[in-house]
Image (spheres, rainbow, N blue to C red):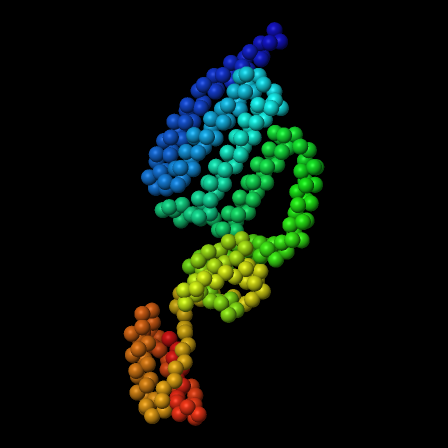
Length: 287
């Protein structure tokens, strides 16, 4: 009589393992076919769950609930370790898709939050693996992690300052990829925002990397946040023998013919300074 519940449980698990996996494979295959038409990378990532993660999970369940092996048996521990590592790889690949943005979809995680989710995922899976699968006590795990964090905090003070500054910028969102900004002497269009720095493309087509900690200390000007239009002031000099009115008219025509300059309001041109030493007149153009 005492063996009846065990036999019933064995039959239930055998039936579940014979029925559920084929159904899950069929569902995932249909999802992959539909998703791959719009996002091949997402379809490839889901295929990892179907082709690798699911079979490993099936083997793990068979070892314990069909073959009756103890959860702490070396074979079970080895299979579960491989399963968790592959699951971690698949989850990180899925997170990378949402960090970089899916094709034909507007949803995209900011780089800072994406990196934070990746770190939490790695820490969560590693803690489960060490504590539940390998049986390492939590207090030992926390002691090791605490010591490692103290060493890292001392060795990477500047980097950690940039990381926390990146989190603050992610909350406030003063700029986004594609905005034109100026921070101190550096200005350009934002190419990338991550947990440590931002990357700018200047007008001279140079790439400038600014650590996030500097962005929180310097005054940052965003030219694209509220209004994409921006006034630019240019100074030029011409010989004094040319009439100022004629020079103003020529400068106005040149400014209006420049791509990106709008006709309303019209360019403002005025005489700014007469340079006696060079017999030249300096003009200021505001467009």
